[in-house]
Image (cartoon, rainbow, N blue to C red; front, side, top):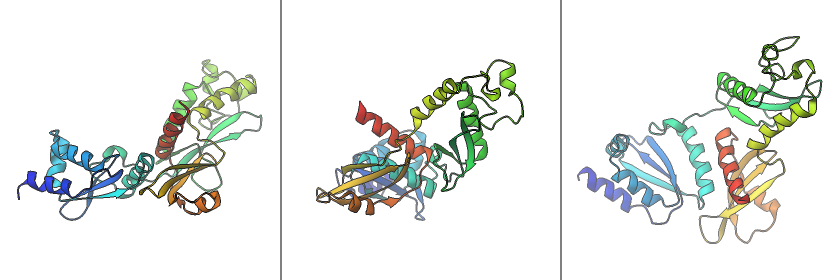
Length: 267
């Protein structure tokens, strides 16, 4: 069987109308690519008809395809992000950052200013963003501090018992030496938090399931992604629905997915 016939056969094995994620495997059974689509069969067919160099190489190496029905685009996006970090497919380089070890938390300092601090991930804090490395976290915090005219000293980026360096060149408004009003400084921090934070109050999103008599569930609580699951459309008790949630890792990628979803609901 030639390559074109082989690829056509793989497409024919996928049912029409599947909304979910799909996997491409090489001859040794390794996952080499993971994607998502509201129509898996049509999307796989696009891969196999494409003429770009990357797609041609993917076609040549793909020996089998499998799929996972998620029932909704939202769960497909969340599942795709999770799977890419778990399996590290060679053709998903842009999305492969896996483990997150550091995060940013927001705390009040002793003077009442909101302080953005980098900490190692643990269960004791509600992290507003997570990062694979300390350097990545610092680079992002430096950008936030500059963009919102915050104080490097308050954010733990400049060690000093006096004013920070930026105050001397007028890039800091003096919060480091209590010369800027707490209210005005904290308002800028809050503006940043409002732009990326998920709601603190628990939200249980109910969406399409994998079958007509099933619904999908996605849980957000304490400003974090908690996981997803499925239950019968007849289930009305939130307590029973919460028992169906499979815990998942929260990170900045899934928060972006959820933030975009919630923002669309408000439009």
